[in-house]
Length: 281
Length: 281
Image (cartoon, rainbow over all chains, first blue to last red; front, side, top):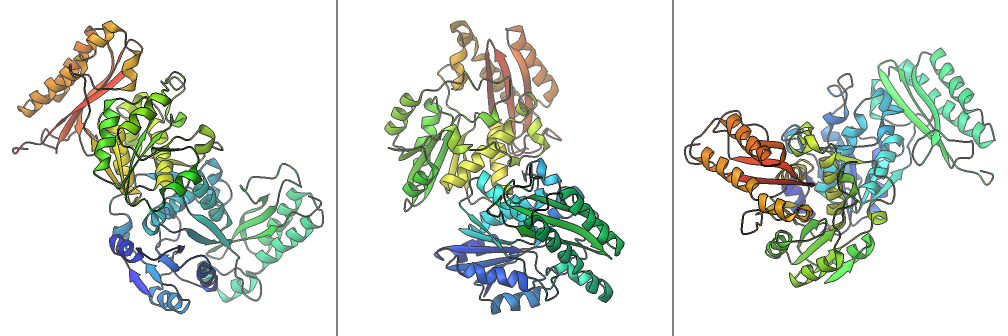
């Protein structure tokens, strides 16, 4: 696996590589990232990964400084997964001057995770557009665990006429259902045992909705209350339309997804479960 | 000359074309545009022009509806200038849904022309990024007459890591010095005779500054007053740094440019003159 930290060197290395499938990451890789790398292989002649902890998407109270950085272990995993090139720029390479031009997503960026992380999706969209302009892939893959991020990037790509297909990869989970995440490392053993409750509750809601329960407000409130009774501090539990994460106008308003974010100890965990539209809806 | 109005057809036609030099326009072409097309030839294997009157960069009180549309004459001029491909999309092709993702330039977009045209440079930056993503040129050319636009696009391209060189083309002028512009067509014969005063005053300021006059505020105010005494309504006359159009911190703060916008009858005219840094500065 080639490793490049300079934009011109990466661009030179990517010439004559054919179709490129790209997986941007912030490092601290787990099986969820590796599944994306393996899926990328089916989409391109060359698989390119990037590792960059993007200051722009962290708020002043977010965990930028303590975000885990495990570069050597990440490289070993990427090489074993058959990644062809890794782009790992320093902050000076990607932000040689203060970033003054941004991709501004629409106001819906400020709901769900955006409500609790002001400016987060502007920072994500801006760095991903820069990485796209540097790598110039034909396909880019992002995990469904960060569902709102995937929606923002898919819509950005379509609305800015980028010549890039955006592919969402399924969330990889531990045996007890907890979605793999870099932030799981912040959990104590006791919190780790409690953490699968988040996915269980989302599954319960998805099953109820699929069976015809249309009282979304009660389903959301009940799940948030059960989390908070068990030591969580919940930011949101929300049933939304998959396409744009707006509240459904009716129970049969397209395929839905239930999303949640809740804090357990010093970790803020997010998860979601898609609810396919049935024949009746 | 090939003409395409569909994005997929244009992309197919551009495959295997080698290095692409791109000149985006809003049509109503004059000798200034044609000079850009000819300069583009030196930068690419294929020269691509576009014609699209971009609603996004017009304010509610701007002249979107009456902006001159002269498609057949434009095509004849482009073909005669040796342009290889013209991209002329309809509004539905470029904006099939309301544009919700924007390129947001920094706050300095709201000075000079941006002060009088709120949202203008956001609209320019967004449509040009979309056109770049569609055409994928190696070089793009813009006229220096729209100096602030050129600065915004040059800085956008650098800050978003676009793999595109931005080239500024010299302003083409009538024999009496008036910068060619689609908006000159709004002038009555009497106003057309008066119009060259704008360039004469900018030249006078440039000569004075090059000769060492450092009283920028007086030079700006004198020129604005002379315009207004002669029937103009002046938005600004401003000496700025070429690189970022910020006010110079001192008379020798890098190469400068003097810019003006003033309204004569129903036309709003803009112009500028670059002032090279001399040995002493």
